[in-house]
Length: 583
Image (cartoon, rainbow, N blue to C red; front, side, top):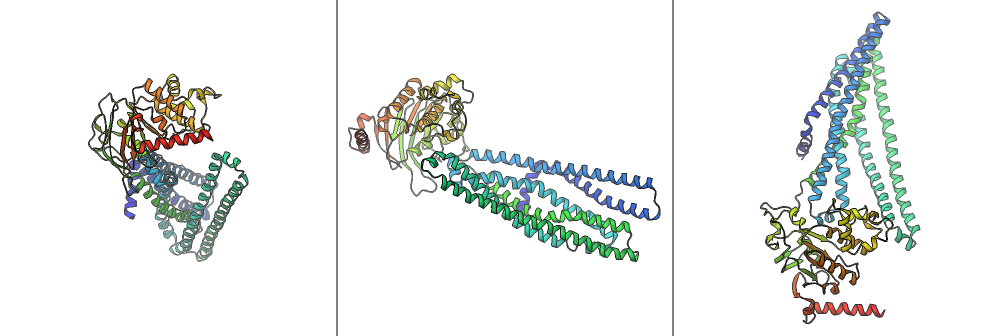
């Protein structure tokens, strides 16, 4: 598993190997300069014991300042190069994840959970960026620091070197211990902040319900509880940090005091020069930061590898609905004839078929209603027509073409599907209408709105077509949202229009007007799924489903004369309307 993870790291860094190599070379130069500077200081200090000349001191000081300045510049370049790789990978990875999510079937997000998907696309990608930027830079720099510094220290005095770094394992262990604790505390803090944000978002969306049911006090208590939870988690994290960093400074100071104590004895014995002791002090100070940082780096490295696997799992998922290997080009123009031949569809978590041997044929330009009791498979049929669910090969056809052999892009360009809950974006009404045709003129937008019987409402809006509909169309009524979604579909030049109970929030008279307008102004094939049998009565033909099977079909006048499911549904609807009129 470790080799697999390292292989993943290598694969992500491979496109940027030139930049990574330049960053590594810069780190080597930095470490060479950082070893050279203490040696120069040792030489200057030792030379001053024999002879003192201000000009020589200034010359040597200028030389050391030049080396230090060069080291700072090269270090800055190395960080920009390596951190830049991490940032670039982050951008590319987010783009790949978004592309991958758009290719997945619609049901995948509901099954996986939008929160889980967002977490992988945000926090996990950030962890990968830290792994490929900060962790790689830190590990490389620490390895080079010890590789160059330890030999230089051992060359000055092996005994003092061992004594000076003897406490460094304690420092590393402390960082590892506190680092894990800080990581868990930081995660709890993020979760608390996420819960607080979710509550604010939910309350803002449901502010009307809160006021109607007089629940302001309850929501204030809920917010106060989550706010305190966030405060407590933040304080715990601050306490851990305020304990760790003074502890590291203390260990570093003890190491330095130990070096001074033992080094002073060496000075008295004459086995160590003052310049050598100063150089050792500089080297010890140089190793403090990489050693302390190593613990954080290892934690980051482990977290990043886990996130890398989670991201890779998402990137490697094959969409359930995708183009097949053998595609058939769709001949234009498309007439809009639909046919099902013994269609069977079963959802992954279901024990039985939702559509069970469904067969029908809809002629081009025909207006057909699909009705039936709840759970009979009407919505599944609508989604199957656009391949929003997995459709078996050889069972559903458009103009005689097996839809599983057509490119998804070609198929969906011929079909406009209007769901019952038409999603509206936080934008203007006009932009929501032209979502499928972004370049459509305002005349076409208004024409589509007129067909959907929306223009009379638009004229009453202060900003007309420039009205902001709010999040998910919150500022519009249910009927206005449905008619906006319908207008969006009518604006598209598609030969097939599928209405999945898209007129449920519209009264019967308006629904009849919309259907009449659609038939008069277009030659589309219209499949209308509806619970409103009075609207279905205006259609050319009605398909009656029960438990995923076609049990009746024909015109309304014919079906109400026959004993069967349709007549019982019709009688039930008429009885309900009579009760409403009496009430």
